[in-house]
Image (cartoon, rainbow, N blue to C red; front, side, top):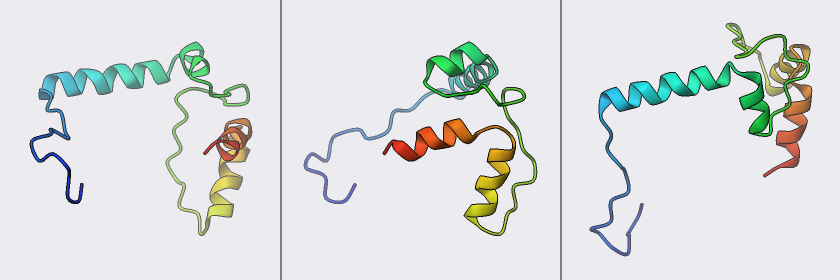
Length: 85
């Protein structure tokens, strides 16, 4: 942060490596459970499986990327994102 008002304020919280690894593992496990993902407000009706992993998204432009995601059933979730800030 440029020119903070209080220089003694801690902007980052340190965590142990093991705690970080457990947090990442639990987040990935939660993303594979459809009810938990839907509880966060995502729409996963047309998605074939969770987590959705696509290995080749090297589209030329954003329009091609959005078309690829729509083909995989993410149209409802993309519309939700467009409506939000």
